[in-house]
Length: 295
Ligand code: A3P
Image 1 (cartoon, rainbow, N blue to C red):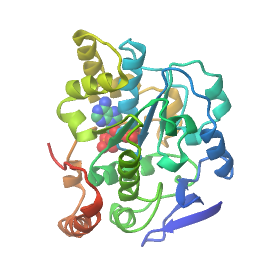
Image 2: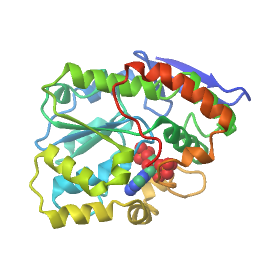
Image 3: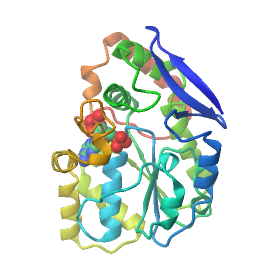
Image 4: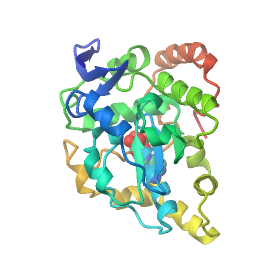
C-alpha cells in the first residue's frame, strides 16, 4: 500500500491509499489489503443484498429502498454499518440481518459469495457532472482523514476530477468495470439503475428493484416506499443521523444536499463543460450505457 496525494493546481491535496491498482480514500482502515481480505471472506447470510456505487451517486437512497423492500417494512434503517471497505467485518459477520451490504468497491474486491452469484446485486450510476458537483460539496463538508484539509476551489477540483485519478480512480473506470463484470458474469443477478431514472419515476424503480430481489410486495407498500424515499421526506428524516452528522465540519448530514438532476449547470462554466463533453465523447465510446444529464 502506498499513500498517494493528488494535488490540484492551487496546491490543495486529496490523500488516497493506493493498493491493487485502486486509489482508496485514506480513511479506509490500516493497509487496505487486510480490509479487502476480510471483505472477500465475509460470510454469506440468507437474503443478503449487495449494493455497489461510485461515491455520491445515490448510495444512501438506494440503500433505504432496498432495506425497506427486504424487510417488508416502510421504515428507515438504523443502518449501523458503513460501506464494507470502511467497516470492521467481524461486526458484519455477527449481524444476523437482513443485510444490505453497500460498497464502492471494484468487482475484483467484492465478497467471494457475491462473485459466486449467491446474492442479488444492485449497481446505481449517476451522470458524472452531477456526481462531480456532489463529490466536491461533500469533500468540502466532511472532516475525515485525507479530506479534512482539502480546501480547493471548484475550478481546481473539477480539473482533477476530470483529468486525474482520485478516490476509486475515476467515474469512467468504475462504471466500465461494473458493466464489463455484468457482461462477463451473466449468472450473477446484477440490476443497474440510474439515479436519473430514480428521480424521474421512483415508483417504477422501486418496483423494478422489488422484482429483482424477488420479494412479493403489494402496490400500496411500493407506494409507501417510494413516498418515504423521496428526497424531501428522506433527507428530513436523516438530518439528525448521529453516525453521519459526526462526519461533517458543521454538524449537518453531509450525505444530503439538493438531491436533484442537472445542478451541474449551476457549477460548470461553458469552458469546463466543453472540455468535459469533448472528453466524454472519447471516454464513453466503450461504455454502453445511456447517461442522462437532465430530466
Ligand atoms: P447531491 O449532493 O447532488 O444533493 P451518496 O449516498 O452516494 O453519498 O450520494 C449522495 C447524493 O445523493 C447527494 O446528492 C444526496 O443529496 C443525494 N440523495 C440522498 N438521498 C436522496 C434521495 N432520497 N433522493 C434523491 N437524491 C438523494
